[in-house]
Structures are given as C-alpha cells and as structure tokens.
Amino acid sequence: MDLITVENVTKTYRIGVGRARGREMMPPPFDRGVSKLFPKWWMANTFNALDDVSFNVPKGTSLALLGHNGAGKTTMLKVISGVTAASTGSVKVNGRIAALIDVLVGFHLDLTGRENTYLLGAVYGFGRKEMNERLDRILEFAGIEEMADTPLKRYLSGLLDRLRFSIIASLDVDVLLVDEILAVGDAAFQRKCVEWLADFTSNGGTLVFISHNLGLVRSMTQQTVWLDHGRVVEQGETDAVLKRYAQAMEQRTNESLSGNRSAASKVISERGMNRWGAGGARVGSVHVEETVEDGPVQVSITYDTAGLTEGVFSIGFIDESGSELGAATSPVVKLDSVAGSMRCVIDPFPFRPGIYFPVVAILSHDGRVEDRWRLDRAVVIEQSDRGPSLDFGSVSIAAEWSEVYAEQQGA
Image (tube, rainbow, N blue to C red; front, side):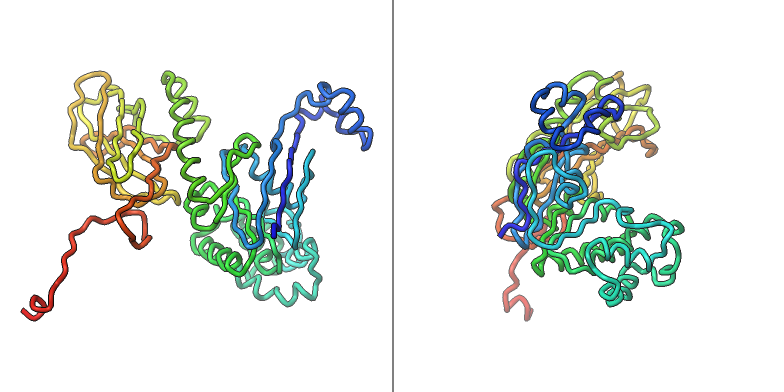
C-alpha cells in the first residue's frame, strides 16, 4: 500500500512581484482560462521549482530526496505536507502526517515552550488533554524542563530545534517529513534523533528524509529519489542511486573545472568547495582516475609553486558522514619550476565500499598549509568479491591470519 503518491507535480514560481502582480491577483477560475488563452504571457518571468515529478512511497518505507541545492527537495516536502500547493499534478497522503521543514513553522516566539507545545499539537489535531499526557515526555526528550515557561524568543536556535523535534516525536503519525533538521544541535541530541527515527521506521512508520550527509542517507533510507533542477533523474534502492549520484557529481565538477583558472575559481565560489591556505603554492587541478574493483586509486595533481622551493603533498579522504579518515603524504619534494604535476597511487585502497571525498593539500617543509582543497567530487568504491566481512567502519585493515592447531596451543 502506497502512503504517499506524487503524480505529475509541477510547482511554478514567478520572478519579481511587481511584474507579475496582475496575474497573481487574478482569482480562479479566471486564472485558468486566461492562462490557456495567453500561455506565453502567463508563463513569462517564471521558473519551475518542480517539473512533472512523480513517485510513490509504500507504507513503512524510508525514502530520501537527494540533489544539489535548488534541486527542488524542500519544495517537494512542502507540497507533500500541504504547506504549499502544486501548480499542476496531485499528491495523495493516506494517513496522519507531520513535517520538520522549518523550525519556526507553528511556533510563536512570544509564547513559552509549554504554550508552544499545545499550539503545535493543535496544528496537528491534538487537543490540550492529549498534549498534557505527552508534555513531560516532550520536555525531557528536548532537555528543556527548566525553560518550559520561558518565551521562545529567549531560546537559542538549537533549543528551538530540540523542542520542535521532541513535539513531533511525541505525536502518533503515519508519515514524517524531515528536512535537514539533524544538521544542527549538539552531537548527543543528533544521536538521540537518529535513534528515534530508526525506531519510528522499524515500527512501521513512513519517513521522507532530506540530507546532504550521504552517510545518513545510506544508513536511514531504503529508497532514494534523485532530483535535478526540479526533475526526477532516478528512483531506486539507496545504494545504487547514491553511487550514480556521486559519479554524476564528479563528472559535473570535472566539466566545470576543465576551463581556465578563473573558471575554476568561479566554481569554487559557487559550489562552496572548502579551500584555504597561506597561498605559497596552489593546487591547479585534481584528477582521480576511475577505479576498478579491488584496484588502486590513482590521483594526478597539477600545481603552481608561487615561489615555494620545496613542499609536501597530501591526499586525504572524508567519508559520507564528514569524518576524516586519513591521508597519504609524500616526502619533501624539490619544486624547481613555476608549475608541475604529481601522481599518487594508493594500492591497496584501504576503504570499504562507499563514497569518499578527496582532500588535497600542499604543505611547506615545516608543516605550514599552503593550499588545502576539499573537493566535492567523489571516489566511489564498489562492492568487491573478496568474501563476507563485518560492515564495521570505513577502513579495511590488512592483516595476516593463520590457524593455531591443538598441538601448537599445548606447546
């Protein structure tokens, strides 16, 4: 049974209120008639945040919406939850639904935490008596018992997130929509939220989840819908979609960086690639060759010396959850020319199947970071046929094993 059915949903927004005021003020059903008579004028200065999107979510399924910023993920959640209506198409939800999209939706900052608990509960159809039965549990889960009678305007933003998640977690809902709510707050509360969501789905709850943390997406969801500029690229099992999504990220980044340095700088600025350093040398480009099963990972780096005469090169890796896993470091290298290139071969590659993001750095001989670049392109490691193993962490530790026979034990 499908709890959520999305059919041919398009959400159109207008650019500039002043230029669209006449069309915005036109009441139905006249707006539909005018749009058919003058389609070109009606659609001027518009863009589709969602464009003919269709998918379904069976009961008890956890599904991720994946894509770049501006892909339409949050808009899709708002359409499903009823915060905004689709321009065309339909959404059907069979069950009680709750959404964690914007921390302030349903809250009044002049009211206390206790009062806002009743208010948000009422938004979802729960009366004062029902919320009274949940109140102690909500305040304890959020860890704000002492601030229950304090107005929300005096809360830190992290406490607002705690309170909102705790209220939603106390409600009896069939479908839960979550948009990056776990990206804020302290680590202990994040773990508590992840554990609660795992219990929610294991008990038959249906979850639609947005996160840029690919590790969370992999561990928390079974199905993934990949959106790109408002269109569905692919829907399927999370592991398979994540692999193709990461490969597409690399292809897109390589195409963007194939131009000159100014183009690369523009991509770094637009895509938020993490880059910093003293500037004594600069990484020009990084190319990670396509990996084959159980094969080495080969990385080629071009660089400009900018006056640095000797340096150390480093290639590290960050996993899907953002944890730094380790790095391969070169010996001190003489840099005699203005520009050059280096090549690093990591064999065997020590990480288990998954998605990893390279961090390339140039350091001076005394350890000063001249340039450090955390790339958004990914290294995808496929599942190998080396036999079963415990899925424990990212690093595969090489070791030699031998059987100890009884006579050896007694010796």
